[in-house]
Amino acid sequence: MAEAERPFALRHPAAAPLAVLAAGAAGSAYLYGTDPHQSGHLLPQCPFRLVTGLLCPACGGTRMTYDLMHGHFAQAWLDNRVLLLASPFALALLARWAWEGLHGRRWRPTLGGRGVAVVLGVAVTWMIVRNLF
Figure 1 (cartoon, rainbow, N blue to C red):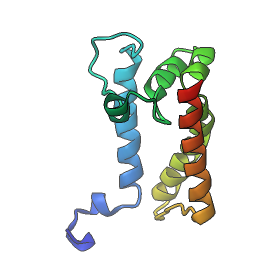
Figure 2: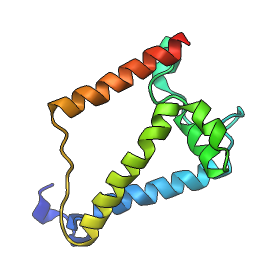
Figure 3: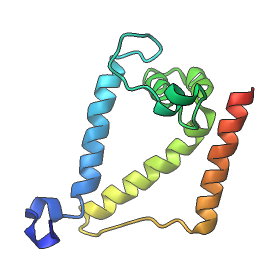
Figure 4: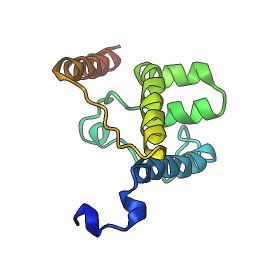
């Protein structure tokens, strides 16, 4: 569907970041009352871990988020240290995206080759370290 064919509300630069924020709020509301440390919930399992039995770089992120929402900072640290440290940067990017969209500007962050290499390097290193120790 071409941009001109979409309804105005979907063409507005704030539509996508606000949709992401709404989905995040809905997911957070469900997660707040659903303890991922217990079995019997409707939370998805990590497909990488199901197939390989290994922890991916993001494994523990759902438990980490649950623990943060309930004020258990030490447990959140144990769930996924690297993801916890990266979360403020991801939230800052989301906030900037929403801010620019609400002001009628489209914003797309760019990550050069070195940035991609750093992110992938940290993710691979973290996956290896957490599966060995």
